[in-house]
Image (cartoon, rainbow, N blue to C red; front, side, top):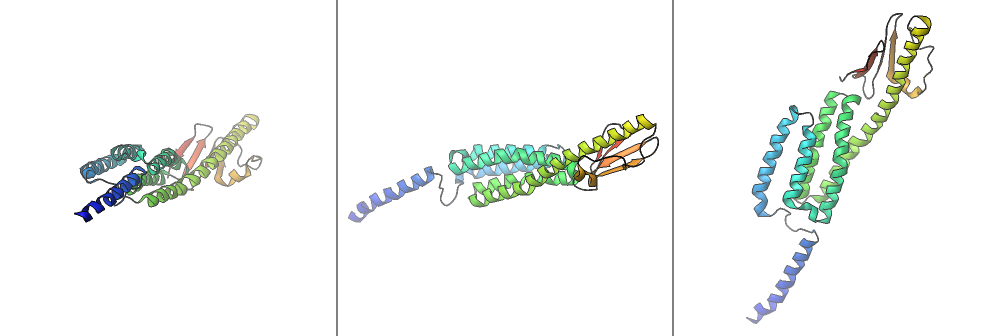
Amino acid sequence: MTDARNMLPKFNAISDARRHKAHDGILEDTVIPSNRQFTISQLLWTMAILAITLSIVPKAPFFVATSSVISLFWVFGLANTPQGRNLLVLLTVVLPIEFCCGLLAFHTIGEIVSAFYRLLLLLNVAFLVAFVVGLRRFAFVAILLLAFCMIPHQLTLAVRWWCVHNEAVRVAEFAKQTKNETGAFPIDLSAYRFRNTNAKQFISYRGASDSFLVSYYVGTPNTSHWCDNGKDWEYYPD
């Protein structure tokens, strides 16, 4: 009886310590309570159904990712812990940028790569699930690594697209101006001075006395932006 009484304060101290750890966001054994299992099952089925719409709605990946993030944070109250708040801030910043990179990829690399980027966007949901089940460090590293693989490359191509497009527009203006002055479009660009010499390698020109075609690509020669006889710019993704 005495031993039981002596053990009681020690047991209470251990319980208090565990409560303090839980309050500080340090969850032991598992971060998913057993009474959440049915909710997780419903959530995973919802994510699967939304993923099916990927082939129907072009912006579905962003919808799937953001709605799943909000659902998971709401269901598990992850924003109540310091690590959860940090992850929420990280995803709030990364997801919109990655989504924009997917849109940019359509114009810089092509339709297939753009669709692949949208699929990669869904990985953030998987990383969030990893965070929920306790793989917190892996989740942070994986989200940052995915962002590093997508964002810098596409931002670089976006800058190139802006520079090359502006130079191509000047080439088209040069061709039309030559037509007004001489009565014929230039056969080549020997008389044209490139303002941005780095853009020259991405631009092609074909001219005849009564027509011309200016085209350029950004990330891959399989894509083509072109302007025919000074009309509106058109694009062939791949």
